[in-house]
Image 1 (cartoon, rainbow, N blue to C red):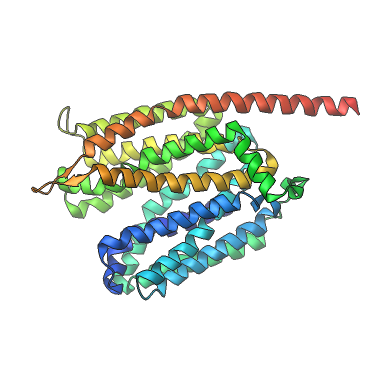
Image 2 (cartoon, rainbow, N blue to C red):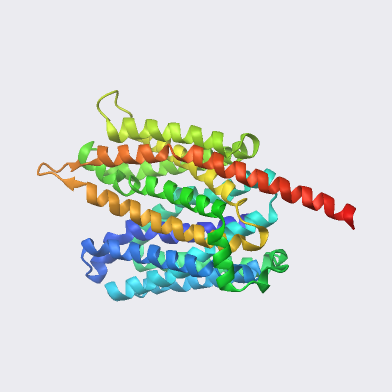
Length: 406
């Protein structure tokens, strides 16, 4: 689990670091800041395409070897960013990173599902997903500081070097994981894709994952602008606020993972959605109508809510596919998440505009839409959970009958 968490840390850090580093490398490469969206978007597009393609063949290989190849490709793409000479080469580097980073996440989550039984999977998933919090707390601020000290190219090299260490550890310390290959490698790629898309529970789970990411990324890309332009929050205090949010999310996601194991994902997602509603109403929809919520408290509340919702979806998603199609399903899930993130950000950009007095108008509109969509999560998870429990009960009954028949 520590190795898988380390893989996720490098992967998440690679994705998260590029956005705040954008102004630095844009200045160094002569890239207009208006084009930075192409850089982050190219990663998401490549990861989504790789997820679609990877669904057809990732389950045909040893998980350890597949993970090593994916992380190696991510390392190459990240390092290539340090040698970019302009917008075109930077986009190319991010395409390579996304093409391997997306499958790396799918394989890592598949390993968790392979080696951890469902009763303890929530806690295991919280350990792996805690990589996001640690990247927020330490990784991104350190990368930004390295850029100040040594230039914008050094953070790319630092993340690539860390990824190389993880590759060596994964190959040397992780056992071979081939239990999913029993019969599964005989399925043709096209047949596997048809089987995955033909499963209504899988389609519903992918829709649920998409809903979570669209809901989140309608708001997340605009948090800083809203705080600075609408709430007049001091710019020097913005970084500590993100750090506070990361610390809160780390503790909450670990507790939420245990709660999912004990109480189930529906209850945890319901509580997380209620917290999300409170954060949106007090911080974005009507920040001055009720009472003033301190920004540090807003970040903590928002990150806690997102952590509870994400761990509920993530832990249940590992139970949706069968053993021999987990990496394929996780690859499709990675595709849906990246596409949904881009779609949510695009929708928000179309509904927002700057006013002559410098305010960001429309934040209440997109937050209200996000709030309405957010309440669909608990009932969707309830349906998925009921289907998964029924299927697992049938499988367990068949397994109990088989020895007696023999």
